[in-house]
Length: 95
Image 1: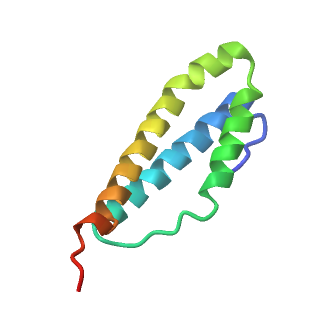
Image 2: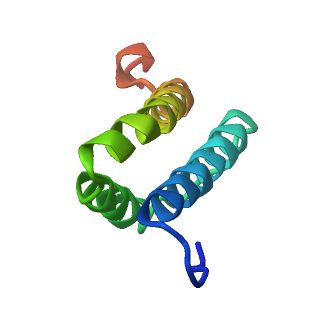
């Protein structure tokens, strides 16, 4: 995400939410294709998104809410894909 001169705080939050949604979507595709992924740094970006969202005035926060809900859904889909891809120890048979 790059800062643009004259950009409003809500624009920065919107751009970060969009960027994270894309990253999570690509991660899900990679997991479903059998690739291992590294989510290092993602927590920091989500923390930044949360902090900047909370800094918005209430009216702007309400306007950004649909993007945050969509991002949450993307994370849930990624978590489901990761769970499906992870070997389940309950299905392993003793050697």
